[in-house]
Length: 344
Image (cartoon, one colour):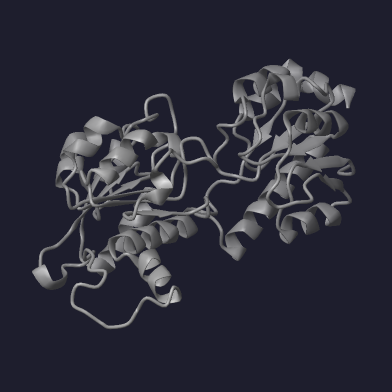
């Protein structure tokens, strides 16, 4: 029986809502204003009121939230990442947690390339120049940038990819059309790099020193927090660019501001931030940074599919079935989970 109450912290795309309605689920969407999230108290109250919780990365889901309801059947996050959820505590309490993996690989890889091209060719700056009615005369020095292809120098550029999972590999695949050489480093997946003919394994420092463009795609773990800091930025070429469409804390943002301001590197493109939605002081004033509001997966098709997957996971939670995308599948074999179902 799938009927139950799902609390959705923020409005999700229609395919998710439709899937819940077709399953006979009563859904409450808390958010009314797209630019206003929930307070902690509102998240706790929502968790207390529902059978299944659908949060986003912006809401911390910790022991206090999960303990508010001893009949909560599951959490179905609409995101690939789940750093906001204390999965260890969820498992201890008998709560299955699910995410929406795989679907955003191509969309994120596309956005990564949009950032690479935008920062290298000064696209936002040139747009702003036009709409401000400043374009009066073409000149050979107007917004000159860097080639991603061999271009006028006829030299192949080096793309360094840090983190070589599905998204990193998809970014490498798109480099073929630009005749680039790809170096890759992944602290957890060397075999994935060496098995891919598009990429050549490089040690971390070697990649930073040799790359014309560095694209970040690692998981956020204690080992990758501030993976790129002052020392790493100083290893890069002064003509190099770095882009981050992974997780904000992978870069020490204050160090990046200094690197951009003092031109240790040529530029940066960011879709994520260390203390999102805030940016490090000075970042917004830089003319060699392209800054986006976490839109890597923001295509209509992909966000719709993510919402549908979250809803499908939520329905499975309600039915007491294994969610298709559980991140803690071991929870289903625990006494805590069996007791939670018995109470609900």
